[in-house]
Length: 252
Image (cartoon, rainbow, N blue to C red; front, side):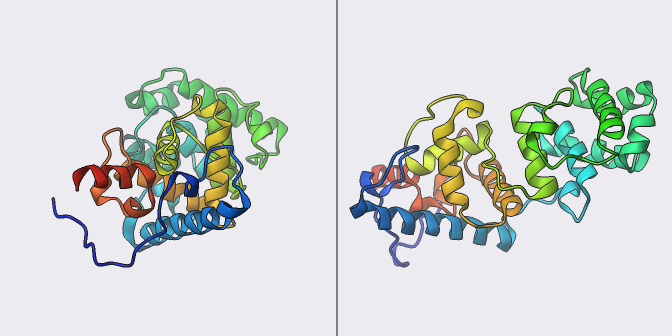
């Protein structure tokens, strides 16, 4: 694999003091460096995403809150690529919440069978019925309200709120937690749902950027480069990532 061009503009030095510590406070001396680094990480991430890093999925087109709701329910513990044909077929069968709520149970179960998780169809259908009954056929903006639906846990409720309504939530799952902990060079402190430290780093990294675009970018970086076996030398954030820089030093 070709090495990166060493002649490009040098990036801020990633010393321990310059890396944002999850949940930690920066001293006055290091705060400016932290802000510069985080701003640069955000800029590179979003530039990569907008320049072609973005993965194309049907629920990322200009769609409504219903389509985002369906997508996140189908994406639970399931690879996005496997969800695409099922999502397209289901949206044709049930283009809105009302038609989903009326869809025969057997029809829905048969349509979702290839994704596994047998209870998913029942939960999706019941959620649609509850949304019709208690929310006027609309997907709630509140993650807390979404968590009242069958099969909707903390991550799914947050994801629906972010992608359907662009709510400024620090979205964190196993994949994005992996990105964040590698960026700052600190191990995860807990499972994603309880990892408040990494969640604070995500919030800091997002800044004032568009929540939907930022979270898609972080998810796609995890899927493309920051995999369980990372492709650090190909990653656009190599020069501003603690783990990536440590790797390149070892290779020098």
